[in-house]
Image 1 (cartoon, rainbow, N blue to C red):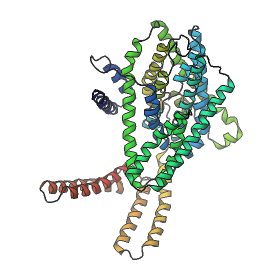
Image 2 (image 1 turned 90 degrees about the vertical axis):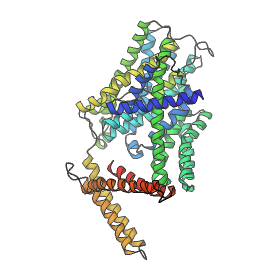
Image 3 (image 1 turned 180 degrees about the vertical axis):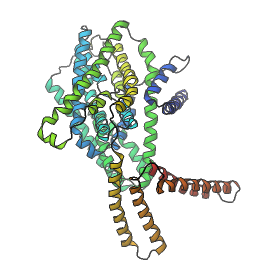
Image 4 (image 1 turned 60 degrees about the vertical axis):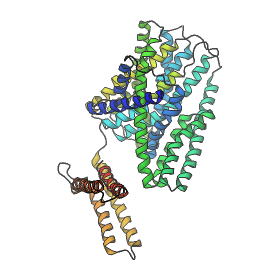
Length: 524
């Protein structure tokens, strides 16, 4: 009972913290992290401890899976080169450079342990980066690169942590061993992700009940991760591949009802998981600090060097990775040369989060299985401090930087024009389908459907018009919402007075709710 109460309290605090962050215009992870740190000093407040298995199997998979579901596969494919350069090349370079720098500061610490620390702090967080990028309104390609990087860099970092930990325990680690480990884990993850994604797609096609469809959708990432972990492959790669495969085919697999329900469920799940995770990070900070045995000067020095190296390496990597590749004629002719502000913003969007938290907890304790003595508590603290510093410094200044450098989202007029053109073609196809199947239908019904199609096509063209006056579709939405409110009130009064049973109210309420939800989504 006590554990349930603690969980309810944590969820409630995370909801309040997220609401406060939205009201103040701050980044929600940062507000929750600070709230957790403050609550850790409240007498009697329960202590928190996140097991790495819980994060890597219970929290990270759904977050990565949902991010993969929402990622555009064509856009991901077009940005694959910069994504791989960041997710693989930059992570490996960051881990090695930071490992070497920390080893220079603390020569008595094994180099393998220092490289493990570098791998722990190397991958930016999927939750923080994409949430801030979308809220700021960055260009679509920039968001795709940040999303793709955060989807794939976790696998690179976790493999490097595992290899470094093995070397720390005395295992022979060479290029062949590392290459074999990466190939086995990444290749196995891709295979498992594809197999279970194809299986889930088959189930979605066979199942007609929306509730059962949604249940399959919710179970998919957890089953993929558990099987991948049991087979000792990369669970991160597996769940990302499954999400990309199913997300690309989702319009053909799920019914409209299932898509709406599953989208709402996943939004709620990710919202609660993200909030609770960063709250728990804050709650653990006090305990982590209290376990450090290294002197304060060394602790501050190592933390400062790691943070400065993270920022500096990312900037030094971004510009050559962006511009040197375009010296190749084939790439230069295919891709437009971006302004220097674009790689600058991407370089600054390096907030750390969930994976750094979980990977830090997997560091082996000194003296266990032949692991030599090293300052494990210091390394765990540095990982936590990097999460705090990147969220506090980069997370809060990224919106300002993007505005100063004028790195804005893509032209909405171009999107509206493209949408209007496709909608015109879709409307023509809809009218042809209506004419082909209208035999025997009442003329009034056919006319009403024809008017609906024409109205939807007109709405798409209206978005190209002036944004300073109310369009007919906007006026329709505003007036129809007032009408729905009046209808809903009449049904409630009739139920209260006993003129209709509860079942009638529920049925009418559902119809009105669906229509109002459609109006809201159209406006979004």
